[in-house]
Amino acid sequence: MELENGRELRTGAVIVAAGHKSKNTPFNPLLPVGDSTVIRRIIITLKRAGVSPIVVITGDKAEEIEKHISNLQVICLRNEQYAVTQMFSSICMGLNYIEDLCDRVFLLPAKFPVFLRETVQQMMDVKADIVRPVFDDYRGHPVLITSRVLKVIASYQGDRGLRGALYQASQVFREEDIPVEDQGIIRAIETEGDSSADFIKCQQIQIHPKIELSLERDDDFFGSQMSQFLQLTSHTGSMQTACKQMHMSYTKGWKILREAEKQLGFPLLFSRSGGSDGGSSRLTPKGEEFLKNYIKMEEELRKEGERLFELYFGQK
Image (cartoon, rainbow, N blue to C red; front, side, top):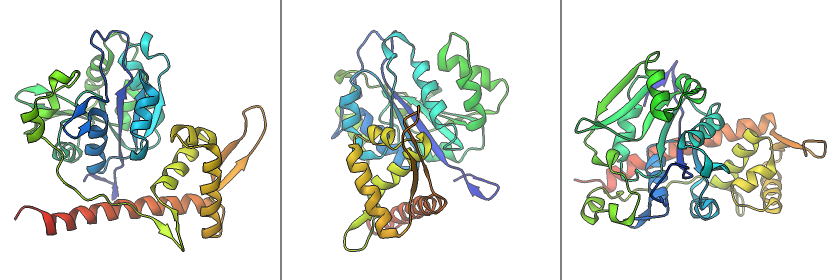
């Protein structure tokens, strides 16, 4: 894992699953891929590599897709104009949202679900502003960019979409192609006919541990759901928006917040109601410190869980 000034870089992702006006063949991120679906498989692969936060841009079939992935702790944003805009508009929406949340970002459309975790990890070890995986002399997905490149891409005004934005950025920032033994980076799945059973079996997600950190007294009161709720509230400034993105009722949001605050003995959020903007919420200093430590501990547990799983269940 790459470090910067002794600090581990935080790597997020933007997945475009919205559709766009120039698409001739309808693409469904809910298409089955082995025992999973296109969109879930992409998210699971990225999460296993330690990628977080993950932003999914939805549009066509937004409600169905968002419910389908609601338990994976991702951020869903809707491009209401997906039918009259190009895919690049959805990319920029995701980049503008995630800009302040991480140091690097993976970009990909939700039609390349069978790339490997090892490819993601290999790309994260490369010290370049733009990293592209290459298989058999073909560039593929995902693409990894730094926050410096993110700003350039998000401000691109040309008519060549992401390809043009990346080319423009490559004239200024360091770009590196890395060869990978992973055909999945160039294997698009847009219809049921694109999914070869033999290939999917070969590229299937391996059995892996699922590590989640829950804090409790008599019962659980703080876990991944509460962590995501606080992160979204902090970033959007709105509990209501956080609840909406998580497909959770506003009443439930207040309930889990009050229970966590009761068990911890201090407030996690400052909330201001009313006003022309409908009110706002932000983390208290103690809440911010607590959430930061929770996220750090959860990530360390995930890594240790992977290590122990490999020790006890890995190939001998």
